[in-house]
Each structure stands twice: as structure tokens, then as C-alpha cells.
Image (tube, rainbow, N blue to C red; front, side, top):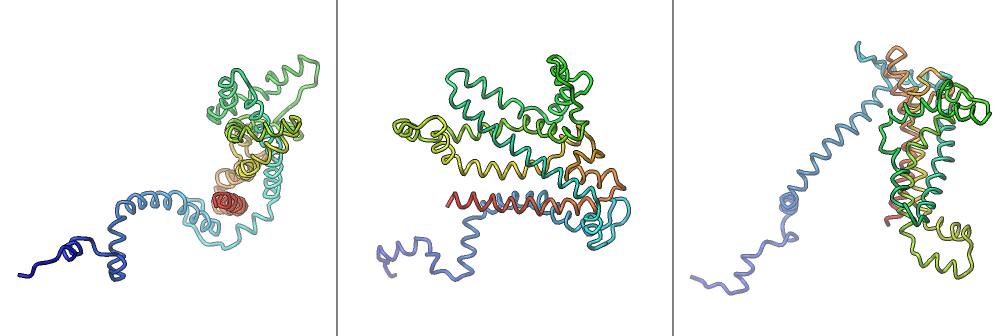
Length: 315
């Protein structure tokens, strides 16, 4: 019987080098080592495919069909898109959505930054004011709408009562073409500014204090410190929040639907028009899907810019 040396025994007992295995063996080895990880990934991918990718593909297919979910669908090609582009409400909805997004950016982009700077400079009652600013975010959207419906009530609403009390003319708010869209922007801004304010506040607290001390030693004023220190340090966060806010405001639905309905051309938005096509105009889900695809294309462009920015920042 041959006696093995210590080196030969060590070589036989040690696992084979993956690099020396054939390709099929290396593949089985990799799969075997990561089998548990693949099992966890499979569940997540299945949920993602079922609830994200399938509705997306189904919506694109539906945009080329005539379907009311009662009778059998049939293929109509690009007829839905041709009908969509000739509908005046299509352009009205996009115009209102873009105006709403522009107004929401003016208010919802600058007000949270201003509030975050104020909260960051507070010396007392910081916790109270932070909770007060974030409180509207915790309210259900329907509660927010009902609350502001009382504020905007032309008869006995809070705003008109205040205006009457100081001798100013009252307003129809959501019922007037000149103020309806701006009134909706106020509701959306008030309901969502808490989240953006806290993100700005976290960014402000991450700025090194040495930068402000150096600026003060150079004689910089408050405005100069804000412009030359705060804004450059928050530049990436501000750009990301800008893109996220554009994506969110272009999908506004609850405020115009609950406060003005689906028939008011002064406040109809893209999402409201999708609902109108699907549930109030002959249940035309194909036309609603075509409208959804146009919104998807625009949001996908903004999402691509957002992903490119975040990846460049990570690299």
C-alpha cells in the first residue's frame, strides 16, 4: 500500500480549483453556491414582472385595441392615437398639466428650500416646527382634499370669510377659470412640501460647518453664504428633487378629480382625462391606454435623466 505524502493528502482533501473545472462544472458550481440568493431573487423578480412589467406591456397592447372589457377586444392599429391627437381635450389636458407642473415647481420647489433653511437656523422648538411642517404629508389625500374644499367654499369657506373680514372681494377659487388651476397647485404644494423640506434639511445638516466659518472670516454676508456655500453644496439634491417633482406633478389626479371633477376644461389634466376616457366615455379603455402611453413616454424621458444623474453621482 502506497503511503501518501502530506502535500498529496492536502491536495486530495482541498476543494478543486474552480478555474481548473470544465465550463459546465464551473456553471454548476456557481449556481450551487448562489442557489439561496437566486431563490430570493426569483420571488422579487416574479412580483416585479407581475405587477410592473405585465401591466406596462398590457397597456401598450391595449392602446392598439378597441376594448371595453365586456365584449371581445379587436385590433384597431393606430386608430386610437389618431383619434386622440384630434381630440381638443387631449391638448387641453396636456396644457393644463404643464401649467400645473410649472406653477407647482415655482411653489413646491422654492418654498421647501426656504422652510428647510429656516428650520436649520432655529435655536428653539426645532422638533415642534419640523413635525408641523411634515404633518400634512401624514394626512390621507382624501382628508386633505376635504379640508381644502371647506377652505375654498365660495359661500362659507375659510378663505372667503377672511377676505370678507378685511374688506377684500371674495373669490370663486376652484370654480373660476382664472384661479382654478392655481387653487389646485396650492393644495398639492401644501400636502407634499413636508417631504421635500426634510430632504433639504438633511442636506443642509450634511454641509461642513468649516465652509460657513471660512466664508464668515472672509466677510461674506448671509446672502453670499447662501449663494456661494449652501446652493453649490445642495446642487445635486436640488436637481434630483426637481426631476422627481416634475415626474410627480405630471401625474396629478386626486386634487383636480375631487375638487373640480372630470368635465371642467379649466382643470382637466392628463390623468383625469385618462380616467374620463376609461370610465365616463363609453368605457373606451383602448383610448385611455393610448393616452397613458403618451404620458409614459414623457415620464420615461425624465426618469432616464434622473437615472443618469444618480449613476454619475455614484460613480
